[in-house]
Image (cartoon, rainbow, N blue to C red; front, top):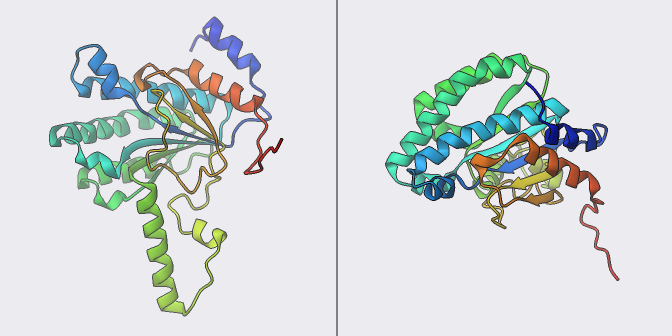
Length: 249
């Protein structure tokens, strides 16, 4: 792929030795993108798939170890049935079409969320994609599907209660709780990107992003490109991370 001049200039500004280990993205703005063009909402979702490819390729190109995309939330079931059905169809299409590309880039697909509650054909396609990319050793692409941070915490607490019933009393600390989250074994996100200019977390990785750097862009998700991701990394590298420490003056 030919690198555009602006993109190449941004790449030169990135310190490859100081990359975020984990980038998480709230992909927002598909509906507004379609509305501005007098198109149905599903057209925005289709256009959003191109942005997914851009984010995945850009992250893999510079060597980001983990990329998590907020693809479908537990709240999304409240949308019109037709829209949800089309979203599931687009997800299945993505999984089938992108497996070869993911394998070529040595990207391993993972998934977090209440996957068991997704339609069975979607679950089957997910399992197939997970199996076919399971041997890859490069970037981990994590799809958050039927995901909600509060649901994740509820499920983690339920697992701990079940464990306590089997083994007697247990002492719960941050480490133990983290080991029962969907994201067990993954580093917490260092950088959280949100598109469309909204300033909220939308029930996404609430535990894990406690010390993440936030980067918000007015760009709607379908217009998000590799240049945007490179700029987010550059801005991230300019910040002094405090990990909860307050600068008092």
